[in-house]
Length: 98
Image (cartoon, rainbow, N blue to C red; front, side, top):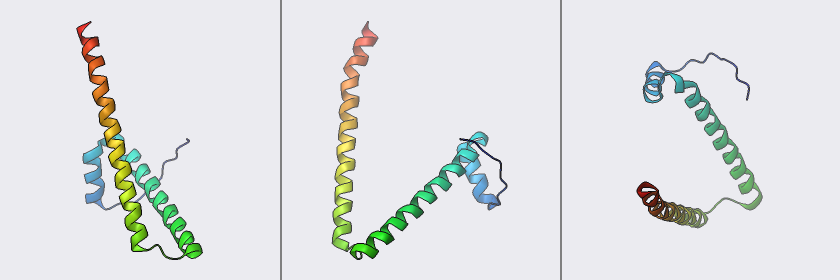
């Protein structure tokens, strides 16, 4: 992706805190990712507004169901990741012993 340099004004404390966290070379990448994240959130909010205009406001029960499903998917993902890590350990031990 082509890049172009822009000048933006940020609160000094915020900019310095970010620079401290990411180092001098990571500042532009951090700002780019923050902007991309914000744009994604705006598109998601737009999608929710469209959905609610078509089908009505999302209820608390629907929201709770979606959150429970999300937690379940996160748990399954963590379990699979843990299982993969556990299955890699014997291989690593065999390789180290060789």
